[in-house]
Picture (cartoon, helix red, strand yellow):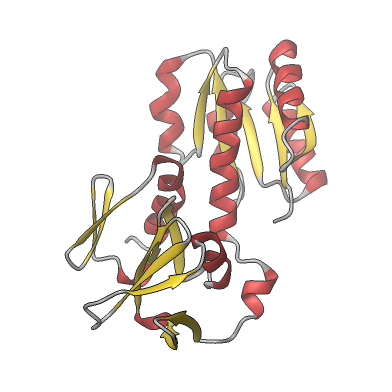
Length: 240
């Protein structure tokens, strides 16, 4: 995946420089601009056109980070940075990916940035995946090559060097020697999503989401915290 382009806006010079240093040492981020106000950020956005990720202080003069975030393109995402904890709820109301309470260290910053990375990776299929037109693949299981149709997959469970592929109308999962990561690369990302280090689910087979679990048939699959935002973004996009 290409680097995520990002813009920082903060009216405190020390905070602005600190976040810049964090961005510059994060391999998957590319800094496009740093601004001392939301007004300046608006001007930069006109020049840059496409910014993936915004790190916005909430309290800025003339135009707050919250107000500015509502003007951004839908495909751009926001991580708010602020010294005031009471703004957290407002931050999530505008669908921010995360909220960093000052002062925060690089570990906290990296966790938030990784959420953004996971979100964009799940949202945007790579060109290689887009070009794949196959509706099935074969796996070796019990000395046979078994055909697996994408449309029949319910979910996939990773077990160290093996995966279990659970299929519709098939009471017994297909067990094959393969890593979950390798299989994830072969699946069309518009139809499948990683929701846990050990699980990939077929999005169209979700029957319900209950607290931190996805229900598919009689299975309750745990949603890991670092995958929850991407899943909820998908669910919200399909909601009325």
